[in-house]
Image (cartoon, rainbow, N blue to C red):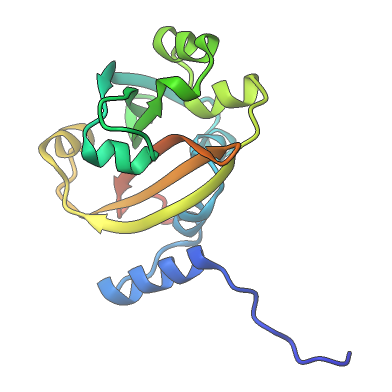
Amino acid sequence: MNSKPKTIPNVVREKIKELEEKNDIKLSTLQKVFSSIEGPVVTILDVLYGDINLFILDQHMEKADEDIAEKLQINVGDEVDLREVILHKHGRPLVYGLSYIPKDRCSNTVIEKLLKEDQTTGRIILEHEIETITKVNDIYLEKPSAKILNLFHANEDMLVREYILIHKKNVVIWSKEVYPISYFKE
């Protein structure tokens, strides 16, 4: 070997390290995997726990406000599908998910499936063979909102991952996944 070994840069690893240092915590290996995977956590949950159930809490079309427009890189007023779900196993909540999907960046078939079927967005993308790139935007802790507190019955910090899925240089999904910091400790 003629060169010295170099550390491979990894933005997500640095975000996790920063989160741990800032909050004086140590994430488990599984929490680190969930924070860094390219795509939704449902695939790993399914492998670990068997069939995972999806319950759609809310889903409707709405006009993008400034915040949503910025997340999706669309215009204020564009139509988006808002989707709130909870993944659970035997009635135990595992992960809460919130997604925004710009209507104009999806085929009518995909929008119909999103609105009519109890499938995860990840599985719909896979079924339609839509090639995407995942970019993790942020990993952080937050206090539970009233809705999250009610879903998990856990008054503790929540581990949050925000990410986007990009198709042909356009954001096609902005997503946020949330679960209690005490979950998935191995």
